[in-house]
Length: 188
Image (cartoon, rainbow, N blue to C red; front, side, top):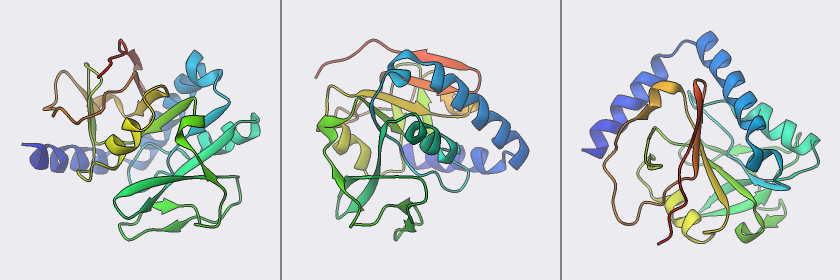
């Protein structure tokens, strides 16, 4: 079921025109900036968007310019390691095409993060996300249960219910171009 949903949501996201994608991303960024937990965060984990994902590049720059420590994930084996990012740092595409920081960039411990912003193909109204299938973010989030977890998505990527497994890590909020959806914190 999840593989079919991944194909469906990726195709829908890819079909969104560049202008619509850009306008939606700007609104998502505005809504994210207005979210108290994000606005007050001093240390944020973001991701370098690629393809048709919500554009995070302006967010990375704005967060850094606001004096926040910005960390980006880097695939290291089956895990994501976090490295500091500053605008102008060179990012290189990994084996699957995702831009990531150099291994020489300063390493950041996840437990130092106030907010973790995660990508996804779809999100549901219970705080679950449909990722790309590798489990990287679930493993990363499991190591930092106290960080506030936010998904970014176009409005059509938010659905009533997605299939979820016991190892799926829930989010605290999903920010779309049509609104901010906050979920009660769950403890495992």
